[in-house]
Amino acid sequence: MEGVSVERPVGGLPSQGPVGEPSSQGPVGGLPSRRPVGGLPSQGPVGEPPLRAVVLDLDGVLIDSIHVMRRAFQRAYALTVGDGEAPFEEYLAHLGRHMPDTLRIMGLPVTMYEPFVIESRKLVHEIEPCPGAAGLLTGLREAGLSLAVATGKTHGRAVEALSATGLLDLVDAVCGSDEVAHGKPAPDIVLLALDKIGAAAESAVMVGDSALDLRAGRAAGTRTAACLWGQGDREELLAHRPDLVAASCAELAVLLHHREGTPA
Image (cartoon, one colour):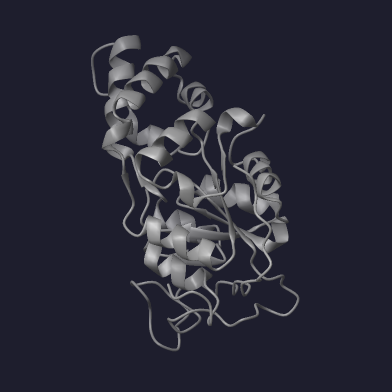
């Protein structure tokens, strides 16, 4: 998939205020907000380029795949390590990394990777899109933004998951961890995504549900948006001072849209 040329700029993102700062209309979804619900002003803070591209993590942000990963991880653990409960919760803390790297960090055999992939592919039809994901992507594209996925999955597995959930045709590029030398939190995969869609870091935002996503975006020079509907710990995400915080795809759509743009 090729990047698209964006001719109609969308308003820049506001900077996130201090955690707990009240909004003019009260919190949205229990979260502090610096601006009223209904969109952003047509122009961001003075000197901030308008938003032209959005890079999104996949698992937990666009697709609900945790139940599939849990079963695949347990199966791979049983085949390579033996009986017992696989340390899946610890694994979740590393989502976004290339899985062989995660296995090394956890002290588990890298041979777990192959059976994990095999089992995951058997179960790909059980993956569902996150609530509101299709509407989020559709609305952003209609507003003229370029969209890319940057995930810890390999490119092939990411394409399979997006296809199974009906989201593949709603993004302009897909980037997997097997395409870069260093996975998240290094900026490599975010920079690759920006290159594929022809966007500059200063006009883009990295959307993720983990600290690794936010760190990768910040290192690449993008703005960052924390998604609280995924697997990440809320307090950890807020501690990384994301530019935007959203509790749902619908709320994120509002935050990313131009006030007079496509309704969220």
